[in-house]
Image 1 (cartoon, rainbow over the protein chains, first blue to last red):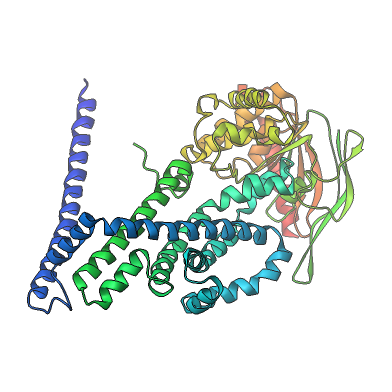
Image 2: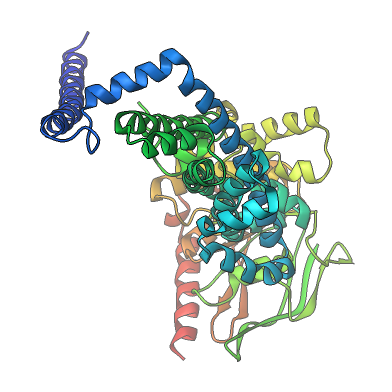
Length: 277
Length: 253
């Protein structure tokens, strides 16, 4: 091995070691912050009425009891059904109508005021009318999740279809693609980053819809459990349920990230986030 | 033979008319390499897009081999300055796009795409994603995409405009070699007079305000041009000075 090669090797080793130290320090900071938070919570909680603020240990214990009894799994399944049903419908309708509006200016002109109106309406206030329309069963909860989530997906899809790079469309035109082929082969794939961003925002709203639906339409799932424990002032159980709902969001976001990196690696590549070594 | 007969283009912008091109007459022979040169705003890129039907002409006709061209002619393909490869497609699938439209079966498409990529020296990268390529490599793919459909006329709009000088010189020579091999007609837009002299057999000089064709200059330099230093050739220097004077004189009045 030449001197130059050896120099590069040692330089590279130093570079990697430095990066590793940095990563270790970052992780230590994160874990430290969480531990400090739990400690402060604990110190305040032991001096407070447990109805107002139970200790983190009490919350963990309540969660464990719900796991042992199986109660939490039943609630999880129900909530999953509410969220999944509503989100699938919101995705199909939001993406479908968004594409139609983006492609046909007439449809856009007709639907635009309604979309703007719906987007500005606080859908949470629709609970009573949803009950009147759909009763208090599963369809009511799914519909409620749908009307919360669909608008961000629709608006983002529309923006994505309309903002396709003109140069790319010109490439399609010059190679003789028809209008329909341009939509299918250029506009739709080009809109995918927007659509995924819309689904991400829609997901957050869907989870809100799921919990409110389960609290206010009929007691069911995680929202129902939270309401029940809240009414009984069993704050330790209530918080355990709330944190379980967090897990929900985390799982769905992870799923979305997986879809993006597996199926659409180019999104990260185009954004220049692709690190090549 | 490609004939541009009395073609004009007026853009209407904010109620005002902007004459991008005024009555252009130009005949390009089969297999000819012609450059369109002029300052910005002289309508040279508009000319190219009018020929390809990407921009509708205000009046006049464009005739290819005796047939009037309307819409997007399938005998021509375009190499853009902003290459705009589709980022979700591999290099090979990008090159296949024109073949897909023409209904070429899959196996044949793949074969021709690979062949086109080989001609531009990109055969090893057919599986790469566009974002993994450098600017020069992307433009090679842009050229491959255009020649894969085996066009009669290749329209190139400042294809090397965004590239660094070193890459540009390499690609200029490669495009010359490709042209001699394929024997297609090439219409090449550039604002670089030296580039035009190096590449073309004739140069069409355009002027702005209003955009118009002012003169067609013969570039009577020996071929193949990669075998000697064209820029140092006395005739090339003469041509350069003549064209520069012609463009500047017109710009002054």
